[in-house]
Image 1 (cartoon, rainbow, N blue to C red):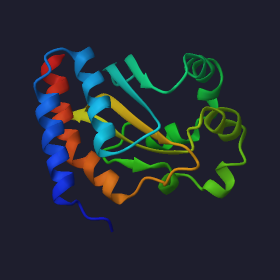
Image 2: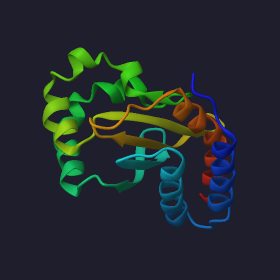
Image 3: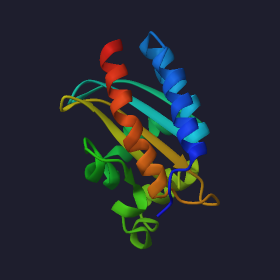
Image 4: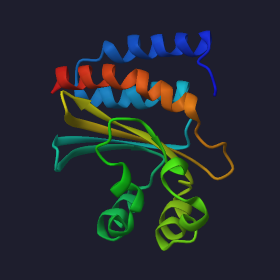
Length: 171
């Protein structure tokens, strides 16, 4: 298992300093996405916020084309097997731990949507405050990148309570 190094703890501390001083939700999400890339490198990312457990409140994204979001909302959400397995979970998740990639890479959803948009590997975390989901962060890497690992999940686990507290405060 990959261990969190002193350098990682310094980056986490800096992340908490930078994000904890933001005083509105839009700037907060932008700062989280920017600073998170320094700790867990990614090719693309999304950050969903929720009005309640059934309703999306907003979406911020990095390196995901608007057309990809439109395609997902109009068609591909029906095929998104990973969302069914991972939405509203208490722990951070890596796609390769949830999906059988040998079978998944042969699906229409994977080839026509994920691969087309360079979203090969993913990891993410749902952000809860007192059992209410406030947001979801999804991080994506290309097929030529290394997959996410347990260290990445551990960092998301460390950060999620701070993220929840700040999001609740800003709501």
